[in-house]
Length: 311
Image (cartoon, rainbow, N blue to C red; front, side, top):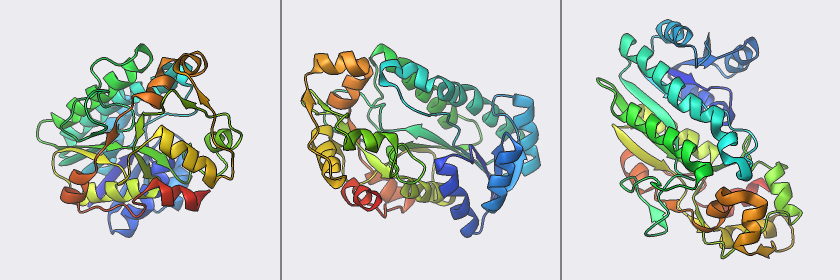
């Protein structure tokens, strides 16, 4: 198939493009610069230049590629400052709204039959009920203020993709990434903070995290390109775990001392309301639907083994 990947030079793109090429697809990559053009060419894709926020450029790029499938991996997430969570996600929120609208508009005009979009299954589920959510469970309807714009952008994007007329819309809710190029790569700032005991457990550490290795997320995306049907899929590993469990285990893998524990009010002062949510109230996600319907099984079924290899 002819596949166009938007957002092709990030951590996901570097894993996804070679896999699509190896699977025999004719791969096009939407990039903004000559540097990006050279990078995707080395990975075996054909570059098309466009700024995702410029509808005319996006339309031209999509017409040039003439894809059967578009994969939207547009993000601009760098360092996440939990005290100013909304600022950390502002550029990505815009891409999820305007960038998605531009790609969908171009897709309608060129006969694209399948549209796959990156979403977030790590931070977005409602903080009520059981610890592990399925795709049928709602997103957070009453988020803390710092997380509201991020969740609203995710919900907008998902509704736009799933409701696109004449296009099979697929939403992949990825868990928290780890592995090469991610915020939890070997030597990353986040792992160094854990190593230096600067990443404490807040409150009871009851927030449940669902992880996924970046390579497994890329494999699931290839499966969605080839086998996906309209709908939402959680792309996470088999082992959702509360912070009070995974953080001490990861510290031990790194040869660090056990993380400190601080009460919620101290966590709120240091990391803001969003940081407290991530530590104490987050809900995990089930991958049963993705395994069943996409024919996908993570090669790293648990962060326990996957992170140990990377550390």
